[in-house]
Image (cartoon, rainbow, N blue to C red; front, side):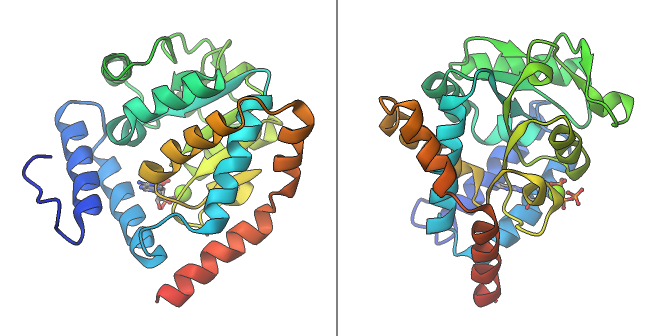
Length: 245
Ligand code: ATP
Ligand code: MG
């Protein structure tokens, strides 16, 4: 990260790519994560590489959902671990959520490496190692979750999630929060709260909102949730991208 000059016009984008490369080297991120990163980077360019107001509203609603939940869980894959390990630990602490490693290309080595990486960045307790429950209607490998983690969660944050799993979690009746820069991707389309923003900006902003809402009562949190309009947010992001073109 030291090698990238901070005044470079695409500094943030280069930093992001560099973190994914490091993640691949460390055995945290699958090589396919590089491709996901490239797709995200293209959409972010079109969005103007900033948190648009509708995304900020989504991040506030997401924070309210996490605070109001009985059992909130934040799902961590290889890209999430490479990009925002400490920030996810901070969000978990601010909302009382659990962290669970949940991989598309699952190996014990990668799960262990990610859990260790998260702990190095301040995470207290990391789930996902038991994998003693299954999400219905998904193929065996991708269905594995912790019984007392994602399986039991009422609210789940699934950043950069694959469309099949996002749909299967939705069918389980969970309140789903998705972070994905592509507003046309299936994952944000099935989410109760689609956040069309770069995870690098989205997660710290959710934590700021959670701190601001820390003393809010249930009625106030519910009001923040009800005021958020998911259709409008998706449409707004798509319009921004179209005008970016
Ligand atoms: P599918 O149709 O299977 O969903 P996909 O193109 O969406 O395919 P995936 O690997 O499933 O690819 O998901 C990666 C998603 O994550 C993409 O939609 C991409 O835009 C998004 N993404 C990648 N990097 C980031 C990032 N830093 N912040 C937010 N979203 C990102
Ligand atoms: Mg997708």
